[in-house]
Image (cartoon, rainbow, N blue to C red):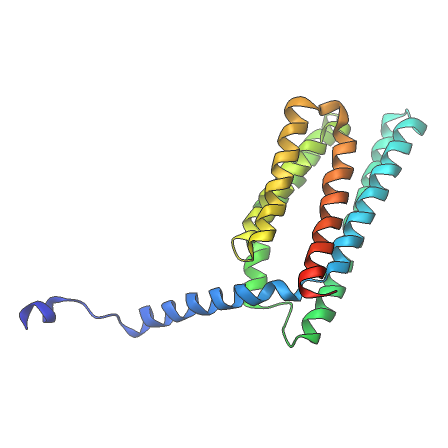
Length: 206
């Protein structure tokens, strides 16, 4: 009896924390179904268009200042389009399955992805200051891969696979194929997103 009295019993706050973790894990198993496969396909298509436009800019605008401005405009439009399409289509699908896109877990995913995406933005500013924007491609893939892997901790394993694919492609490009950076960008941001969107749609529907 003395031994039992000496063992501390979990208080209400600890029990509430345990329930919160269990609830998050249960939500994780169903969050994946709110993703719209269309948004992955559209983001991939927009990335491929961005790579083609960038290649055209490289040939058409030898002036560094003009190329820099159009480069930033091109990829800003790609990012805005991809994020907008993902938000609208995922919101529509979430409503269809009776869920909310801005759930507690969704906010945690945004926080988890922030370091990787923020690092990518800082590196972009660095390469911009040194007039070397065409060298940024493998770093974009690596930073995006880190962000996706972080999100994968709260989602299903397919998300982690996508992040690992970006990390591997970015590392290979940086170490062995820096001269093919734009092509690898099209393969990663374009092809991987399209394949991922199709895979999600085959599993959970469009």
